[in-house]
Length: 364
Image (cartoon, rainbow, N blue to C red):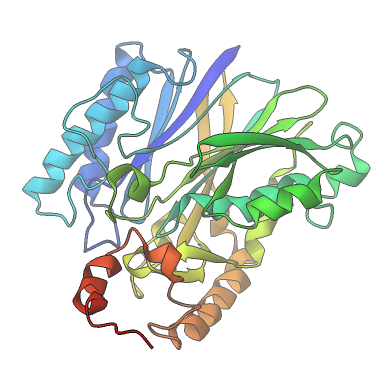
């Protein structure tokens, strides 16, 4: 059957500070989506969290960018914001940048990743959700999953993957896109996606079947708001097994923590730590940045699961390494490379501080 999988997230209020999501907020979101399911709008749903971000995972048959689905998500965030305000949670409604819904949540603050496909005999999907980091955080893992044979041996030995994958890369500053074919255009692609604050992998497609393999959110809060209101905390959907990488190949990039933008006040580089959902509580310096992975089987649109994939003890060493990397980065305090370079601080609170010294410069 044809099904659309939509993952829409927003920070509607943190408990305590920016570290966690309050159970009452999650419960309210569940009430809202259960009502939508009973009314026939949704086939199924799952409500979860990553740090202080509320995550809505929904299946339906209305296609991507459906106004009805996006309005349901927006209304859910609004209702959950009311709960957050009553509890005086931190930053209640901070990702809702508009006063009312206008047809699509894209450009209104929430992060969105959606894909439409024909459900296979066995449809396995992995949903990645991150907190305290930026939308370009998926560039490296998506490259390794779909283009690196040292990570994904299926690219070498699986006949249905040997032709490679096509990467849709977005220039988020100039609002343009380009398609790269892997493996022959890997070097050209790396020139761009190695700069994840400017170029982001939006989607990946199987080159022979044309089927969508992965899609990520590329919404940037600072660009939308014109100021710092929080990090993007992106989401990503990856299809698995068959003509797509195996579950183990999708998760493998996260066994080696890598540095991403975000962390405290969105102004620092820090290691992306893979954790179980219950451990997505970034308390140290509002971090380190966290990533969770939920796995589902889809059965006629029903979400069978989830499996909490990073609860596997095999990721214990990655968490240990991430903490060690965090120690190293924190020693730099307000100095680069822990603090972002000045161009990365443009939409943070730093420009307001810079006004104090601007008029004091004199010619050499």
